[in-house]
Length: 350
Image (cartoon, rainbow, N blue to C red):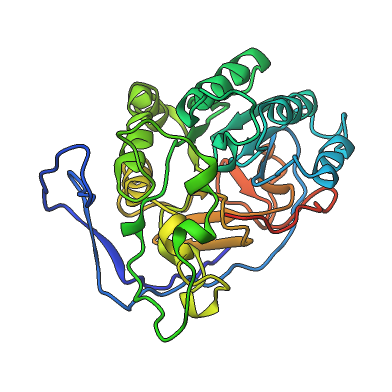
């Protein structure tokens, strides 16, 4: 399959920049993104196609928001037979309440052989938990404990040559490099984004600086030995996160209902992680899955496939040696398009 690439205006530099934690302005350690202001080009969205495959398949979901009854019903309606040999990547925003989170992940684990998860911002809201002293970091630990009990994976793993690497992340305002829209009255971030009220952070953390982005990024450090082992032995790697690693993966501000959305969607530190895993030049087998913005996305940019879907989307499938098809890209094949019932997930607050 021939894939065309669009040359981006974003790049990575090897110039070293010193930084102290925490700080208001993110610096990038070994790498630094150099972006020409007002020159963020969006990648071409890839067409859908289907291929038949046997053996283990990889599916992706994000932003389930099962606090809404219709979305929980959709999860319950997923087949308890069809996906028993398959892998599911859940890219955050499962549910606002702990009770619904545990129920949803239990249902998914009953349907898939392996379920991987990274937290989203809605997962860490505390306004309905009924525990006055619970903050969002304490809730995060509760969710991760629940995942361990359920057998839901939050750490990297390699399966039959395929490495899957969950990446923890949080957004920071300086991720937004596009010129602001002016001449209109635009609500503040505090008015537009419920995170500023529904999340509760210890005093040293704030949504208005880089402290949370740095904290969540540091959570990935404990897995570096496993990541290196996957890089040595895996034939293909899928990374996934809730938040966006590149601004090109969101429509331009002039196309958005809320033009300041890019300030609360992504992290530059996340792309540094991804490039450290997939390489500065990427590869034909490199793939990253994300969520959060509720925009369906499937594109190749800088030799990495970037994917987001609100449906149960088939991402990769393992084929037998005698069962290659036109979508063949090596050891694993891409299944472009949605598989299974159509989700009723409605657009929610970011």
